[in-house]
Length: 112
Length: 115
Image 1: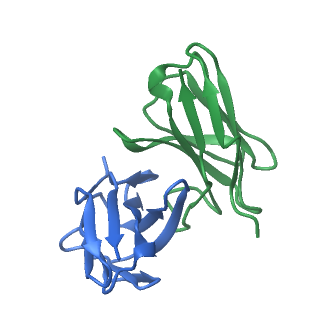
Image 2: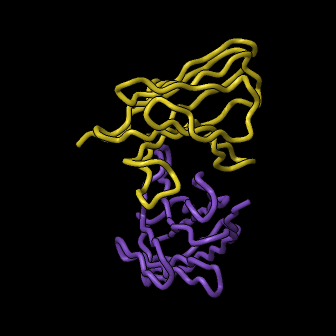
């Protein structure tokens, strides 16, 4: 079945550092890819999405590009802020599955 | 536009009891999905309803059940609670069924503690 693998956390960075969280997927067909963020004590919020190969999703300074050749959807941000501290989930839907499949999540802590 | 609401936000139950959680989707959304989130297993799909019909079900025992009403509101029920059912239960709604490109919007969750 479909699966998502994302880098193990936790990740700790200083403010203004560059962030990369790796995400790779296994799916048949052409899934849609998502990054969700979960702040402490809250549900998940959609951060960005991409629905076809080479699409770039972006929001709040975060970016991720749908790379079909490497089956990847890495999340990047050029300069993180303390307020970005949260858990980030990579997910996919479609591509042979009608379920939204999540990675394990990566906890990011940004220190001032 | 109001977001997805879940009630109650917190619950404490005893082993062997049953519990019902409620989810009200965003107005106009007809798909409701439920997820269980635990530190060990992460986010696991429970089931999805669309237009009052269960479309998909995850790998959970029959003690977990759900339903959707004509106004798209959904409930999930867990009978004969076990300690391992302690988790954050998240509901998500979408315009169309999962598997299409419409994103899911999540509620804040119901934190269930089984003692």
